[in-house]
Image 1 (tube, helix red, strand yellow):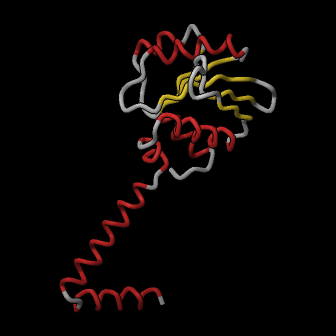
Image 2: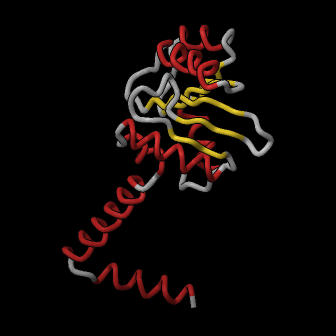
Image 3: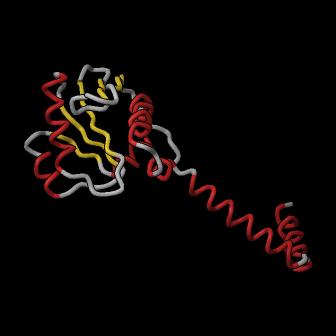
Length: 161
């Protein structure tokens, strides 16, 4: 059955009018572009800042955290507050950036940890971090989640690649 379908398609292909071949190839390219646009990380790259924060709420909820979204302004350095089922609490600073994330994000979440009385701080970005951000994060016990780790979290949460 499968071979006969391939044979039938092959025979049609060779006898098809030129415009039909162009249309089929064009539809193939359109499908590839459409599939690429549907990847989650590509959608993240197009989000606004607050939209990214609310999206991360969904991601971390899917990963089993209890999530609280802080106010859009006067958030005191944390966009999200996470809690594990065991009671471990985390302040998250979300940075949906096109450029490299600097040490200011680390400073913000480091200040949020004592303010909110949580156990640790994270900065989550779709980008990467400067060397100074890593340098400041280490002694402040701030976890920096860059693009590749974010993609892994999205996969674990069940989002499309």
